[in-house]
Amino acid sequence: MTKRVLAFDFGASSGRAIIGCFDGEKITLEEVHRFSNDPVSVGGTVYWDVLRLFHEIKQGIIKARMAGGFDSIGIDTWGVDFGLIDKEGKLMENPIHYRDARTVGLVDEAFRTMPKEKLYGITGIQFMELNTLFQLISLRKYRPWMLDRADKMLFMPDLFAYMLTGKMCAEYSIASTSQLIDLQTKSWSKDILDAFGISEDIFAPLVKPGTVLGVLSKEVCEECGVEPVPVISVCGHDTQSAITSVPCEDGNFAFLSSGTWSLFGTELDKPIVNETSMNINITNEGGFDDSTGFLKNIIGLWLIQESRRQWQRQGEDYSYADLEKFALATEPFKCFIDPDAPEFVPHGNIPQRVQEFCKKTGQYVPQTVGEIMRCIYESLAMKYKLTFEKLRECTQKDYPVIHVIGGGTKDGLLCQMTANSCDRTVKAGPIEATVMGNVAVQLMSDNSIENISGARRIVANSSELKTYEPQNVDAWEEAYRIFVKIAK
View 1 (cartoon, helix red, strand yellow):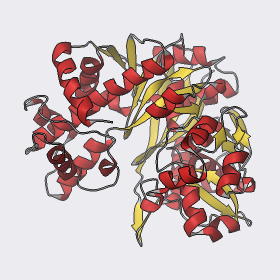
View 2 (cartoon, rainbow, N blue to C red; view 1 turned 30 degrees about the vertical axis):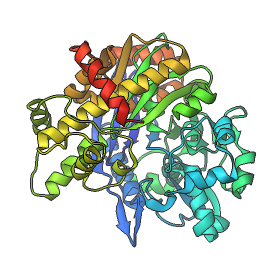
View 3 (tube, rainbow, N blue to C red; view 1 turned 90 degrees about the horizontal axis):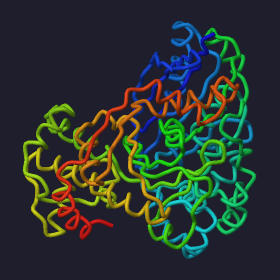
């Protein structure tokens, strides 16, 4: 009998409702609803339009019902962001976007309260201004009444699940992105919370991926015309959902989850927390079945996406295929940026910032669309090589294959450049890695799939994988020596 589950996958710019159908050997995906996810700036603050997004969830449920129904629901989203629920169970305000400026400068300020070494030693999480800890520090400093009035803080997938079921939880993978979890106890860190004046009472109970949270509320069922099916806490962080679907059964792999953000890393049985990993600023996130996603966050396709939006604002509607073609028509290795430089994080004129970065670092300043795009493409591939070297240094392992998963697998130029730069075979796929992982955890929660190894075998059996072999390795290696002089 075919099992049908409904996966909601939210990215930073869009969301989808996809039915995963499992016949015992293969998973097939059917997209029933797609919608944009547009941040809204009001009064100098950038918010997520969470009520409209919940409306889109209900539209997805209705369309999934009309497409043949489903047996359960799972939701994954981006990390770190959250909503605050008051004592009456109401959302206090729209969740604030991680690209909002409220956390600027708070990382160094936090180190004056708790030393960097201690904070990393407890959490094993990469330091980024957007992390939940620094968002909460901002609230405590500038808007303390919000935390004083809050009953619970819910991460984005948990907030949507609460809206569907009325049940509150903190799924472990999404909670681990917060820099508030003690890696040893796998619970909220009392040391961190006490140091920064944050009450443990605002956090919901932690649950493992695969936990049945509850069923759809009567209100949602009546509005959408469905039965009260289970809502399952899958790996709520989209990165961990994607890692769950890496098509490698032996568990010894390097992966590049390629989307708006690039996540480069591997999966470990236990975290690695030491001086080397701290200096590299690499993260240990909770994954399925108590695994650890050992990875580095890198700005990814955001640079290409936001550049395209800038040119559209200037009246030039280039397709992604156009941008790739323009890049290929230019001379290689003329200039580089550090993709993770802070000026590339906010919304705005990325092409101009690329030019400014090259000028201030004494490089050739790209002039044409193609030159700017070539600079971005090559810089991303070089950053992947830099991260790959650090990953191998930390784990003391080598990885003959890099699995590229997610939407970035459609970008053949970047996949090929990654193979060239890292001098490794790249296997690209599945494209819908996050959804596949979401679906797989739902199927494992009721034993339709036995375990993670079986899930990965089924994902491989259900996906078209494309292989890229390294080319022009010597030229890339020579250019890399230039790149490392300007990159972190």
